[in-house]
Image (tube, rainbow, N blue to C red; front, side, top):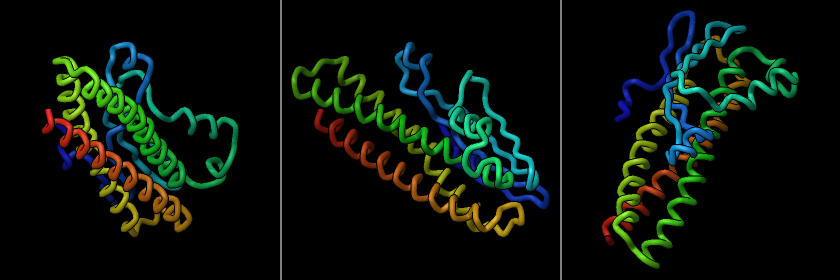
Length: 195
């Protein structure tokens, strides 16, 4: 179970701390028939030139796109300061939520077809499992909205005005994620009650 108090944004005199759930799909979870990998991620913005991130050792992450942009020197990532890099890491995590939810929606659609066509005990069990999974996702993504809100309200000198613009975009994305999670939650709840 995810506790909201463990995730969020904390501001100190010399650095900023962002703690969130990184949720993503990889080949290993697909081979185990799991929907996603979930691990805690901490992003420290230490100064204008330093970002440190910590994550659980589950073997992967969602940062390949960020690494590629750094290596290739493309876009703003090499030109801007560390606050922009911290934003890019947060944005990559939020984008991974969309990918997981897309897969979730596909699975839910298949299950609905099974329920209409030929409902089995196994299908009802999967529906119950999906209900539990969407509750977990909900508890994981809501604190990210609060985290980004708190970053936007911060008056820290470590975050530039230009990065605030990008953070507003991240906020819009996380709201779309939450809307999708709530839609699936209501859909599963209604389907679950019908069976």
